[in-house]
Image (cartoon, rainbow, N blue to C red; front, top):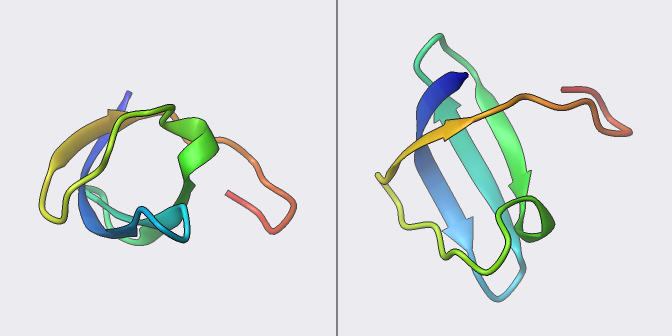
Amino acid sequence: MAKGKVKWFDAQKGYGFIEQESGGDLFVHHSEVGSEALAEGQSVEFEVGEGRKGP
């Protein structure tokens, strides 16, 4: 499982970005985190999936 920190997340727009420990940022959509709110700087564990525009 990958680890990182929330770079930013806009709850009203329903998306944001996670900065991976291994480098690079990943897009995150509210549909992938359920009802949990993400806070800037929050540590997270996640699985990388493939979207229409890539990982």
